[in-house]
Length: 475
Image (cartoon, rainbow, N blue to C red; front, side):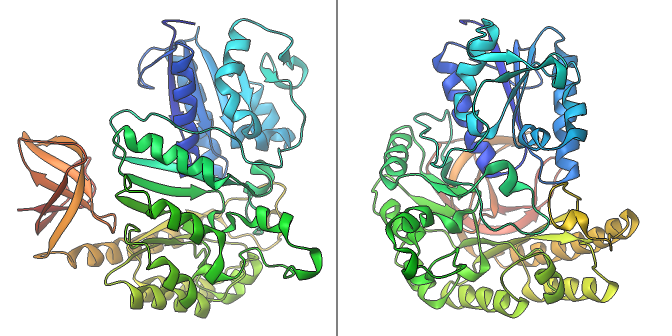
């Protein structure tokens, strides 16, 4: 396989980003050479997403683009979009299109490199042609159930990076009424703490200083270990988060924090109901943890939250934010919001919009509700039409952008520090680029650049140039 070129395009969540890094590392170990996705390659790997209709569309677009760039290339569809297609005849018709040569589901994603080799060598003991169902595609020959444990894959190298995603958990047991992810990712399964720590140590030796701890449902980390060790009569019915002050994620954060090589820790998305006074007291013991918290909201209306099968109220969410702001000077709180959920009236939406403005998020990722076949909400009769969803989405985005600008302006004339990640050129000038603890991007004019060095300065301006997010410009 020497000298064959491969390219990866990743869609969706941070877990997908981590898994793409794993695939890349494994492909290189087999002798493949990585190139940019928009460059000629022999193998194109699209790590797909299916969380929304837009994600499905983007997955299809990238598969089409890959085959168009090189009709002779092997086009490989990996991940959630493939899993969803296994359960949806309408999507199977789309996957039967000729540009897809190989399908790999989430449960076999860790074996992507080996499966590709089997395909290229046409090892029919490991692969079989499923022409009747999917045109000319090949599919890995495996059982049809998700593994009960997390995979054992880990990263050992990450070229020219100071920041790395670390997947500690996979799967979700929450079954929000709108969400397809539990069906394509399976039930929760956590990685052993020892494996996670070894992975972080290995990456630290390669220059990685900041680690983002992520999972499909991060708040459930370790619950599967707990379930196996606690007798049935002692379990709390319906408790998917565990006691907030002793949640297993806290123990993991503490041990990562104790590693001298680690300079920063960030957390992926957390359940709002995990945030309690006891939980925050434990968090604050970790001096390397960044005050940057993503608490998924989805709606600021209690009626809609209940219909979504979210297990908190807007008052409980508000209290979680209050506790974080009481404990940290100016924490970044980010969120996700769905516009146009079935049954959302004008009054319900107004309630959500007011709540977004009230909380004042640093960032709010707005999604228009997408019908996901197989979920409870797909069967709801009172669907909101696209025109209304578009308008509500626009209003939420405007409110979120206003909040974000206010959050950034807090730092003007204040001294901030960041880890140098890149040397970028803007209008002919060289800048060091990186992020503060609160994940605000900084640019510092400098000819010199040392990756991983802590830089500091006074925030004098917020710039918004082409291809550059709003950033603090330092002097």
